[in-house]
Amino acid sequence: MTATFTLLDDERIHETTARIDGDAVVIAPTALGWKVDGVGLCKGDVCIPVRDRDRLVRGDGVDLAELARLLDRPLALDVDERIAALGTSAARRAGALASLTAPDFALTDLEGRTHRLSDEHGKKRLLVTWGSWCGCREDLPVWQALHEELGPKGFVPITVALDSGADAVRPFIERAAPTHPALIDPEHRVAELFNMINVPTMVWIDEEGRIVRPNDQQFGTDMFVQLTGKPSAPFLAALRAWVHEGRGALAPDDVREQQLLPTAEQQLARAEFRLAWHLHRLGKTAAAERHFVRAAALAPTDWTIRRAQLPIRGIDPMTSDEFIAMFQEGIPQYQT
Image (cartoon, rainbow, N blue to C red; front, side):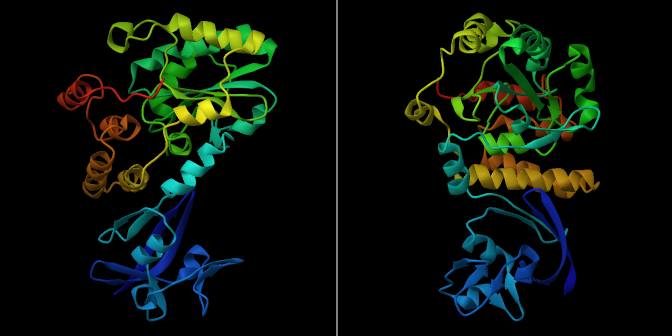
């Protein structure tokens, strides 16, 4: 059977024609910019040898699952809904993080204005992720106060809400009245780029765009210190020392030693989450539920996937039995 098929490919959405053969999806490789020739699977100057062409080539098309395997890309697939999400390989993401160059991104604020991380080049940057589904939403006024205090010294916080959209975070952002970039990331792109597993997550990025302190869970207030065991004062003092005196940045090897790098299962979980979220927004909640559950099973210690999906699915992320069970399993931690 031939049908229209949707491919979620990184930040792009492709509509193509596919042949559905049982659980197999056959597409033209050109849908993703590739072609099959005598050398193998090629795009521009890049060619990947194909040892078993019969596994890949199906008539005038290619098997989507085999194509994803050859490209070393995680694939979340829903044949019934005619849609798939292609993610980034764990090896590629780990290599990018190990370079210590902070991956750039573009997100919008409440007014729809686009901001890039690189817009703040030449400043010390504190990247902070948070969510309306986390008590860390109460820390937003602290990050704004730090911007007012340390901004003249060449410092800027960039707060990113890993959330469903502007409506979910508007009350908290408006209360903080930010003059710093306060951005919204409904696709959880920043969590994927930096391999974040919980909120709040802090990353220190220097004037040249290098990561000088990797992912760490810290807080701006002591509202939840009895639960987290992390008072805010030492972190805020260290941040001020970095801005005022340049102290606190780690050596590159120390940053790499402390980095949490993604696994293949985590990257597949992110593809499943993206597919689920896209289906949910299309109103296909039953199909979305299957992929939300699969994403959580693949990455049980990643709360940017597992806890963040609860409010989308209509489950309270603060007091529900589901969250209490997650909390009892243990809060995901970074190396400190």
